[in-house]
Length: 202
Image 1 (tube, helix red, strand yellow):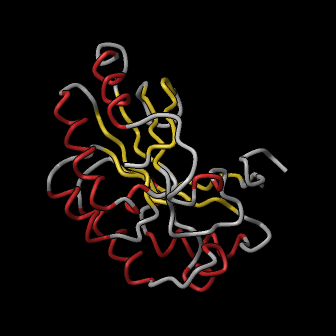
Image 2 (cartoon, rainbow, N blue to C red):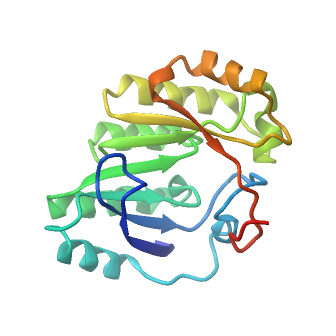
């Protein structure tokens, strides 16, 4: 598994919990505002590994409450993601949050069916008409829709979120997203801060 790094303590990334945040390398989208653009390629620098992450989580299980698996896009590492979640679950004390772009609904369904996460946050990149303008790759919207439906039907705490890139999106587009998702209490809009390839604000 390509783990880029870990934030050992965060008060922001898992709503209501003190959590560690594990960043996985790789992403299938190329959003122009991505603050983790430096870890989009699957191959590249890594500053920790799965063994060390698990050792840390075991050591800190009486202090931390949650673990956030993020990226990049965690589902890119499809054959290794479920085993990692199972190992974290086996520690026995952590709530697990998954951040995803929703482009692997079949894998998401397996994760939900196995009850390996307690919270799912999905990025909704744009309204349907502008999705490919944001992600900058061909995009099968049926996959996005399937993930939205899975998350809403899961019964789990969840969040849908849009980074408001005003170079492409308008207030009207944000309203279209709200109407599409139809889950207003779990939908947030985030400020877009443009960053360079190293994650620094431009």
